[in-house]
Image (cartoon, rainbow, N blue to C red; front, side):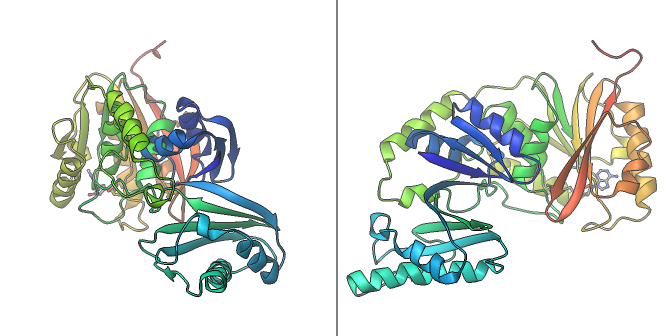
Length: 377
Ligand SMILES: C[S@@+](CC[C@H](N)C(=O)[O-])C[C@H]1O[C@@H](n2cnc3c(N)ncnc32)[C@H](O)[C@@H]1O
């Protein structure tokens, strides 16, 4: 079957390589998505194991529409009773990038009318809408005139891993955190540090990646589990296969934050992820942090002075640069920030700059090689 994995802008290539590792076929990079082909087992595996996917969609129809009547007809022509009954509930997500359809909510409404009208005509009754926990989540995507109607195999977005039981201000999205780790090129051959870990998202994603733990190990709700063709035995097999790949990690996984509440929050979340034995989380300001091991990878998401306000942001980033240089030689450090002036104040030469979005904020993810003396071969 043809499938589409949606992701965040800038993570498409990372997602494509994750799909390659899962043996997906006909992988094609799209805008904020990757299309691929595979069987039902792969669809289950994609939901369980992909770290940088937001949701997995199964297209059931592609057509061309340029007005609401054509959209209504196209949706109504589908035999929806294959996928749901009148006692089931539905929800529709719509995204549009089209001069013919400018309001995605209206597209969702028209499509919902088409489905329930068909049920009413054929069965005399109609299914209800449940936007939070529907039996069937349907996705309508319109690009110019091309309309793709898909079933949402994930249901809730896959960034909801189930471990964020507690939060701080400005936490990073789990999918973005997983993307940063893979973009950093960390080979799991050295320790990992998030020195400003907040609620622990980047550290937790790093720890699950380091141990090959499927990111959705603890999640029980998936859209495909409510589908008529759900295969419990196959799902269990896919889970067992993924669990068999889990392995211990021999280097340290460290989170630090200057804030008491952040430390506690990160510890709660790490425990909810079942990682409390594997990660170390301490309260310490970066100004005083010493490198815990001789070499490693640092990924940090400092305040940008946007969602988290910070006095004298440039002096703060200068401190980050100074500390990295003084205490972390032998490390590869990566900093993500939307504050371009502040990033300049780090005062180190970035060997790589990757454009990404943290929510609506346009960011740069910058790499600093902190090798002492001559560069490592
Ligand atoms: C944008 S938040 C990080 C959010 C985190 N990535 C998450 O997912 O929850 C920035 C964090 O930097 C911490 N911080 C600010 N100044 C610090 C300093 N001097 N040393 C260590 N941590 C600091 C804050 O307490 C805050 O938790």
